[in-house]
Length: 126
Image (cartoon, rainbow, N blue to C red; front, side, top):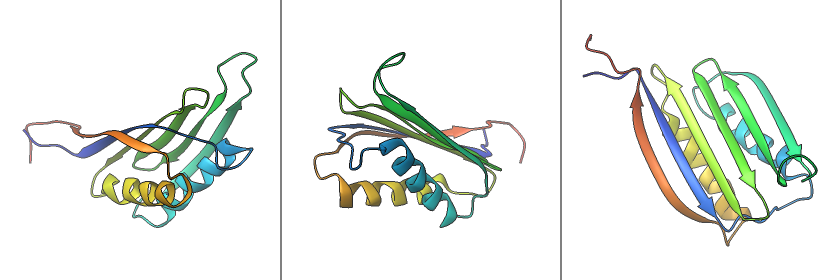
């Protein structure tokens, strides 16, 4: 079977907000990761959760021509999930590696618990 895309999933623990408005900071990291890749940013959005309706944290997404890169955080638990899905010739590893490097320089207690790669758009053709 052939694939026309890849999806990378990252799970972290030990997340500590590097700034007060960490959702906006995260969206900036995601957008810079996309900008240095072959992917094309078509829309970006972040929602910061104050704990009044949803648990404290954020959800950030950059919609790509090639699919998306997103971050979701439960800040009180220190949990952070990133996923990056691209199709065609765009390698999601370039985006993910940039993000991890940014995290390593700003959050020394952050621990990568899982990095999974899944082929997507599985098909039988060439």
